[in-house]
Image (cartoon, rainbow, N blue to C red; front, side):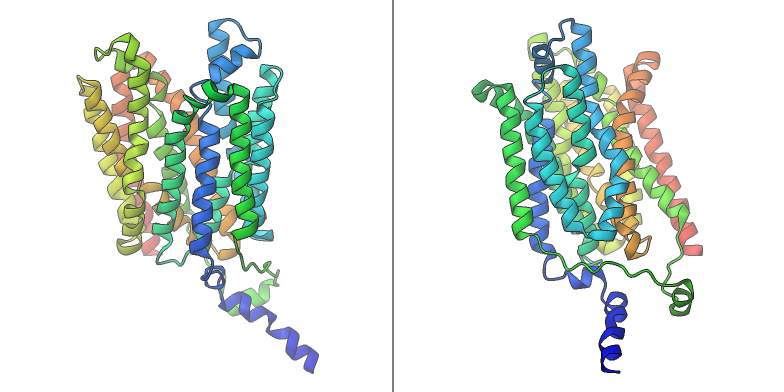
Length: 420
């Protein structure tokens, strides 16, 4: 009897104490480490943008057309790899814990990033960039950890802060990449990136804490008796995943043609690259200013309201970008667009996290990451095709209309959720 009394209570703590409740002591410190790790990994991934074509040339590619083609493939294939494996890593996070996934991503990225500096030809470069996406994904693993550890009333704010780290890494990475190769060489820059991620890996191993209890598989009769199974709202989940894709699609749709668009605004050729970089960075800078605030607003007024408001606002801000006459006008509008976009991903992650049972939260947040990266891959392709066939200004009209339509989709999904 004594032994059975000691073993039977193992089930109630799993049911009554949620993962967030068990980790209430740790989530703030973990958030700091996740922000730093996401920042360093995104810096390392994005800092190669300014010198990637030069590295491709060093690896034996000679013609200009081939350099452009291989540079695009090498850059974009990382996001494709992350989109493929994010649900897998999310599922493993549900089964074995969030911290092991962070360590796996940090160590994997540190190794692969350093190996990129040892590439002998462009095929190895592309393969290693794909491997970086397949085994990496520190930011994705961080979203799974913070999205499930933070208390429900603070999850929007916490995800907004985490988003700020990701955005700042994407913003600062190209700036570092424009300076560092001149000091230590292109290959040395990759080694420096690997060393920087190694620091994040060490901090993750030493400082991140997690109270994880592997879910116990229970029979269906017990689940029905306890009534613990949460019915899935497939309409809401589908709307949220679609919206995540649209957020990145809208932001990236103009990227392939933005330099050409700016050249039509009278910018001298000598300043074209610099101005284009400033315009591209303006949206990330705007998002950094408001991501945490809008995430906190989602905690107060609800994620659906923030999502629909941000979608409509972003869709409306897209339209005047088609009528600018000066580059600084476009930069200012892109900054405002970044400010309105910033509230979307934290709010979406918050709702996705609470749309499913705790034991499936990591897997579902993994699908969310895949949806985002799909938008990042598809956005430039769609934007480029629209720009070629219908004119560059049409890109803004189409993406703006898609965002507003997506707001209607979310309103329908919310109403369907309420009626159920």
